[in-house]
Image (tube, rainbow, N blue to C red; front, side, top):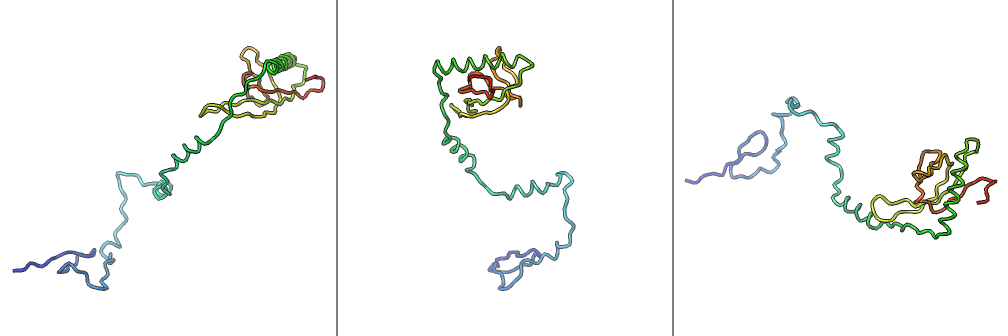
Length: 169
């Protein structure tokens, strides 16, 4: 006695012999489940639209690697070393600014500084021009305070000019 190969096909559970599907047979007949109510889990909260959309976002496995390579290629400058004469001029200018800002009657000078900004991620840094109005000079902690609240350490100063007509600098 020969046994027939019996398989189920389609959602409706129709049985076919021989395991072959008839040509033109429609397997998308969902009439038995199409009108059922949508299931809402009592245990798991519904996912937000943003969270659902994130699942279908672009897959970019090498993004972090590209960021690392870009950081490696980024160049930084070495901290310049000032000559003794340049350091002496800076010290004189800072001393003059300190004495003038200590007097309340003196108008706060507008200054322009060239400073070295240390890089946070790698050795070295960059050189920046910073214009501003000087509010105070802290000789004890060795920094300049600008009107906007920024503090510039003396060690980072490379050049300093003040826009005061009565100054010979």
